[in-house]
Length: 111
Image 1 (cartoon, rainbow, N blue to C red):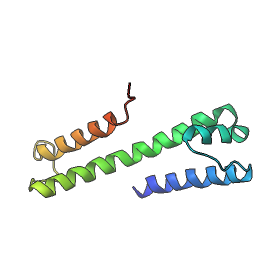
Image 2 (cartoon, rainbow, N blue to C red; image 1 turned 60 degrees about the vertical axis):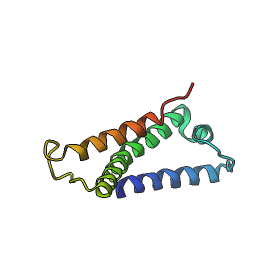
Image 3 (cartoon, rainbow, N blue to C red; image 1 turned 90 degrees about the vertical axis):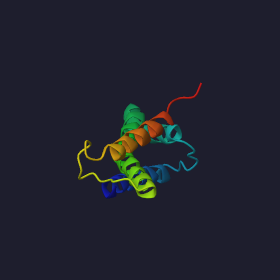
Image 4 (cartoon, rainbow, N blue to C red; image 1 turned 180 degrees about the vertical axis):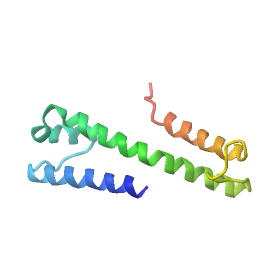
């Protein structure tokens, strides 16, 4: 999680420094940020910003779902721990999987 937060911090810091220098301060979305970074990063601005945001998400999701599974197991009194094998601690690992699916499903486009 520390690595994820440091990465996120430096993405924000470098984008903010670049945007401030170019006097683009009316950013309301990631698309706005990518457009504003285009003069500095060229056509790859959107791709670079997207890769950074997705990468931080990949770092944070396992920590968040694992934390939620720990909380659930503590609350209901189940055995838990990543040091145990899935066969030894089935409900804990199922909880991680369920929280991961819920988190991923929340990001699906709505029609």
